[in-house]
Image (cartoon, one colour):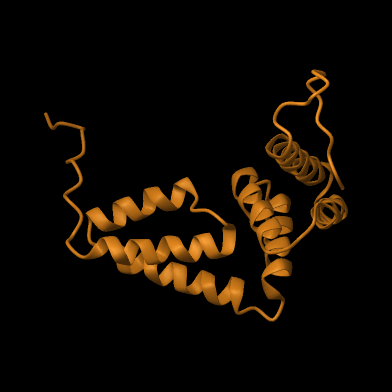
Length: 158
């Protein structure tokens, strides 16, 4: 009988830390942060000497997202809308934040969610408005974590 436990990952190859950090920098530039899934992929890529794949993916993403004739803001909004239509909640959240990082407004995100209603139906719209509501709540909490009136409510700007 064989042991179903996979072999532990080998130690990362020497010299890959700076290459992995360069990949992280590309995600920070487009999304404002490095998604957990990217960190997981980088860990595997470094351990199994496959970092070149992640570098190639990051280079392609850079071309599509930042060298696009649409510009970074519109490109992130397009990604957000496409992901809403596909029902992909986690990546849609990442690209909604990326859109804000690239200069989009909450009104822009609402407009994308409304467009998703027409192209993909109520589920896409509901997901979009859920994500926007979360982002607005997060921003309000970050701006005013403890309301002075003790009501537990925070003021949200448009």
